[in-house]
Amino acid sequence: MALASLAVTYPAIAQPVPPKAANACIQRTAEEMVVATRDISVVSAGPVSTNGVRTLFMRNNRTGQTAECRVNTIDGFVLSVTMTGGTTSPPTVQPVPPQATNACIQRTAEEMVVATRDISVVSAGSANTNGVRTLFMRNNQTGQTAECRVNTIDGTVLSVTLTGGSSTPPPSSSPPTQGNFSGRGQASGSVFGGGRQADASLTFNQNGFSLGLFVPPGTGAQVRYQGVINRLRGTSPNNPNSFVIEGRVQSFASSANGLRVTNTAGTCQIEIFDARIVSTSCNTNVRNSSTRFTGMRQF
Image (cartoon, rainbow, N blue to C red; front, side):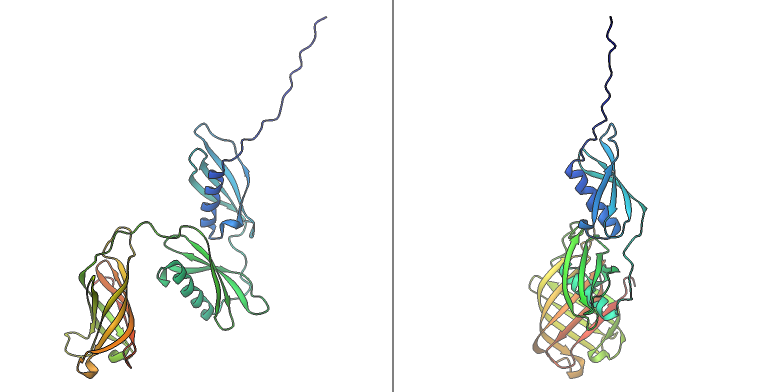
């Protein structure tokens, strides 16, 4: 008597997702949703293609927003992240006072060592009984994110925690160590009062800097700051003539006192964009010596 053969079918065993691929998708999804990586989880994964590509199904644990992340599981390279559903951010219960917003932008920029214009508030949590609120911040250049806890009553920042994304932009080309630069725009403060059209002139080398602001053709209101450079950093990955100088002022002169040079102490921050002076902010211990300059990016 012949015995019938039995075919036993076992369910397919899903392949585990390599940690490198899972972490890459979590990081990239967090950047797309502008949240911390700890808020993102992998909830399931599709099959692996013949070239190692797999779709991971992602979820924002705070908002329920979902996404699909296509990743090469061999090298962990993310091919794409597509938002698929849910809300984009937690609801904001009430508007954030400008004082608190500006304080968080300032502190976050300091923590990331970038200009305040690169930082934005993307969402905000609810305020507790003490008026403390968490603002979710983003570096618009690098995608780096942060959480800023701030007292919305008086604008005091309690803490800034960097939460994800790249901490620095692509490596910047080295800025020059010496040169002469100029700008044209609006100067205010000191002898310029509430604001006047003015030119700016910068000369610097490894030993120090000299910054002048003057109303053309240079025979009217003018000031000059001289000092040493504390820090020189590039701001563009492809343009060495875009950089910021942070200087320590050692002397000041003004047309208000016949351009007599006065030894003093203070600070200057000077921004150069594409070889033009686009902003300066200087102050010293001398009375009525603080100025701000906003230059045109093209002229």
